[in-house]
Image 1 (tube, chains in turn blue, orange):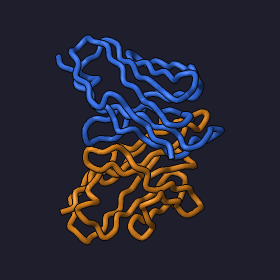
Image 2 (cartoon, one colour):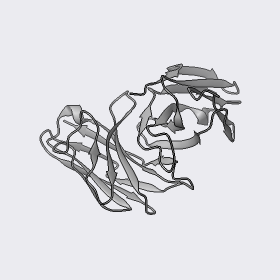
Image 3 (cartoon, chains in turn blue, orange):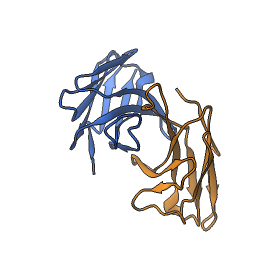
Image 4 (tube, chains in turn cyan, yellow):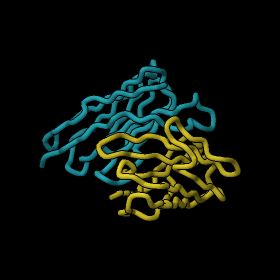
Length: 115
Length: 115
């Protein structure tokens, strides 16, 4: 079965600093998803990557999928307290087509941003 | 994105009782998933619920404990039966939707505490 490892497990940064969270898979990634979760709440969809070398950005968050499709990174520029939360990466079970199917998740990265 | 609602948002239940969680989506979707997030843990898939067929359960989850209904393309229920304190978790439904039907969106979750 596929396993995802996120690093770091937790991160504390000062407001305005840049940061990167990594997600590494033991197998090829098909449909790599990034989510943000506030404590005790649901998951907010950030973005999804499918192709090797793909990069997507939304506001100050950029996600990349490496060429070999076994690692993804999430980069936040000029972090703000509103970025605080748990960041989760998830990988699809299927090779694609119209459905990546169920997701396997990493253990999450807890981000704290101090004002 | 998809608008997903869950009821109840939270509940406190007694050991041995059952709770049914509802998941409503704002449009028709083929695939729906039910996940569990135990305290301090990442998400684990319970089952895949497709309309018109029985739910497919993951290893470690059985229908007698987590019966699922999927009466139409916008609604599903998950019942947690004969609850014990170990069932205390956040339960989340998700749907797969998007232009290429590959994006997955999550509901706000149901926080269950079993005494």
